Image (cartoon, rainbow, N blue to C red; front, side, top):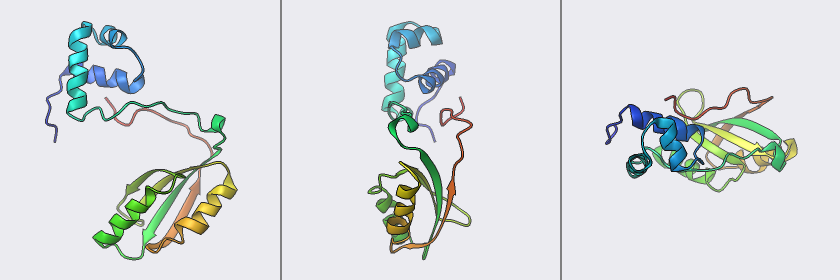
Length: 155
């Protein structure tokens, strides 16, 4: 539930920032059709309300030597709240896991992994992931190529 009311200008601001979070406030104000000072006030309001969580650079993993992207579907031995929380906390210490979701269905967690190569990923799966005391099953999916990449929210 939103604790902030969003109008058409706020939505345009969010759409533009999601597309390019690095632009200046002046450029943003021009794109959304308002002057710079009220645009900045709106952005600050969206940040304070938590609608805008952060700004960051999107890196090219391949150019940095990270050639493998994979997903792991992880089933836990027991789905107690303490086990779910413990496994979720463990993912924080695994740099290869870039994003993690608790999911419903055949698995309990979906992990988005990025590694330098297949050997590094296999080592992680065998030595870390399956070795975790809470893990029962792991199914992995290696990606071939990314075919779509957009902001997380359709605006």
